[in-house]
Amino acid sequence: MSLTQLSDVLWRERNLLELLLFKLEEEQMILTSGRTRWLGHATREVEAVLEEIRDADLGRAVEADEVARTLNLSPGASLAELADAAPEPWNELLRAHRDAFATLTMEISQLADGNRELLAMSHRATQETLMSLQDVHTYDGSGHAAPSRASAQLVDRSF
Image (tube, rainbow, N blue to C red):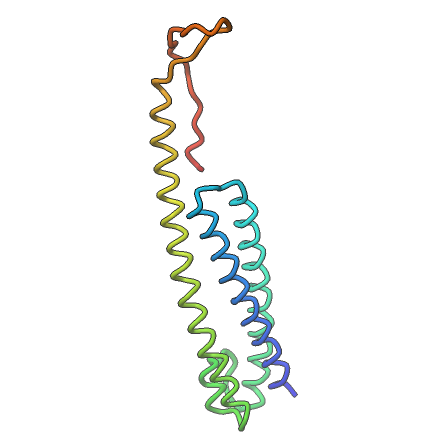
């Protein structure tokens, strides 16, 4: 039955959204700790989960369109429309999935916004630190203060 397959896909997508929320929280912990050694790994993990969500979303769309046809709805029907047309107990299950998606999406959005803000603050702090390094005095091979020389510096502003 296609409602069973749709429910399976929705459970998979919910689990992936929960995993994304977890990975974003991990990323936030790394950012707030100030120890960014693992930030690249955390970001790659977030991107990997996002890719899995994209794949699951495609599968959900296919299954939802199949269910829509069996319920005499047009393809592309929303989850709420599917729930309204589905028989018991499927209607309640589809509504529960819809509510969970709304909650998870809101939490993910808030956490992602917070992480972007933390990254922006970190970027600004890094730029300020790099700018302050222009007045650093160094030492020569014998340990005496060496006169500072003007030299070109390469700064990667994409970080």
